[in-house]
Length: 327
Image 1 (cartoon, one colour):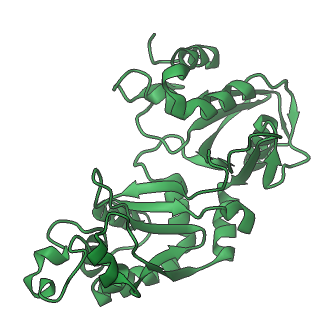
Image 2: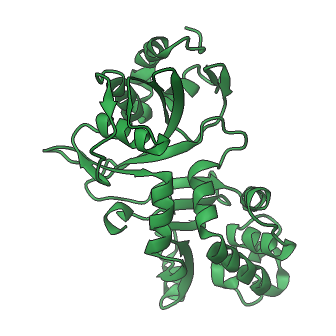
């Protein structure tokens, strides 16, 4: 079947054919399918709470109406973008309303009709399938790509700051193992520098940028991680945890709300942690006992070097576990 949906019905036919082998997108497809079954018109009021229980589709529509400033809609269509974009075994694109979508932060796209008016609202979907909330991955990048993202959207970044971020991520050429002088006194973790170890001038500049432009950076990570994204998200819905009995719990925010609440929750801070990776040898663990490192964070967002074998130098931003209860 061609990956150029003519309408929502056609798109859902495509989705139905691939849902079995795309289990990671099941919630997105279910949400889109159920939204398309909602009887219209739908009124905006009463607006949903930040935490909702049971089937979320009507509340998602109400939140979208609030974002648009509409009192009601008389028709709504939903397409799960993530599933469609990966449906063709590597084609990695689709067309929605004549727009080619290659990479998009919105997982579900709503089209709302009010008389002759038509507006689209993007939804980013997060989900936790464990009994207790866990960190939710928000954005993965490289040191260079993240600095480019900030510079192209917010503020210029010096070479010192770029080098500092590369040191934090452990880019080749910027690691302890690449510096003979550093290696003379370094006993463990030669693959990267910790936040407190990166060059002071660059680190202070980065910290000032996170402090000064926290709202703008938070919004970038939520909405504009992909260049030329045709459908940036306006709403975030988060399945908070696995509930085996009783109604499922969801957190529901507009992007504007979560940006403001994140800043209110906390500015830029550094939390101390001990490096206790299980992959460390017994000797390494003895050497690191009592040593703490700085974990940078701002609001509900924390970031770190990903450090796995496949993407060792990736820069990873996460939403704090259980943030929806704290803000």
